[in-house]
Image 1 (cartoon, rainbow, N blue to C red):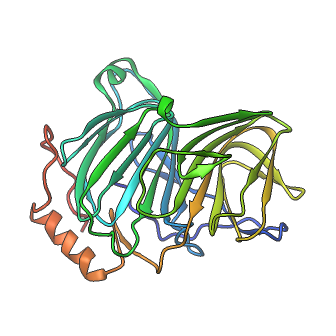
Image 2 (image 1 turned 30 degrees about the vertical axis):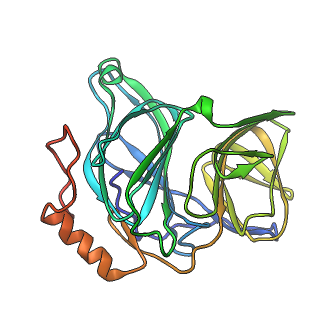
Length: 305
């Protein structure tokens, strides 16, 4: 989605758990038409968790009949977008010719690489009837040597992703591995992404195997080392220790992270790169129409001035 990263400071909660490095309270931003997002990354004190460089939580929002989301075609380079829904539906179209309706629980990974354009709109049926929307959009920065790979798109229905249910834990492994299960999604670097739902009083482990890891509490409340954290919050942990997360009440959250990239990235609008010059080139490419067009689309989002 074409959302400009904010340079505004984002406050962190005080922490007492030794393994907890940072707690980010996402800042709410109104994108217009009553559509708001909560942005957790990038943050003034932390650009990435593993390769996750952008993290937005949108909704819940209720669209009335005749209304919907219309994100016009816009470009990306140097990243992969992950769109994950809890409620609602989005129609994805991109310049590689992929057309895919995104539904709750499905994994949708669009790898921009050297460049792709896409649109995201409410499907016709849901626009006619109205729908509730709740979901997350993340950007995963591509590692050195892969920033200019060919663009691609992967889609896995919720039924094709492994799930784990045990003692009040319900988890879906979207990417990478967790709870003894592995996602079929192909990635060019080491990262993981898991939806975890806990009943009140139940606990789940956050493995120490990953170099960088975090928990995004979508809704509910968790207890860690005697301290409670209410959603929405992004909890970033130091490496090394196994963390036990207990639900103080029914809680939905995302486990995420992976191996840190070899260095920081520049971010401008929808572009991510290890090179300022590459971003300048992408800006000119979009401004002058050198990106491939999205079939069946005549609109586009102009380059911000």
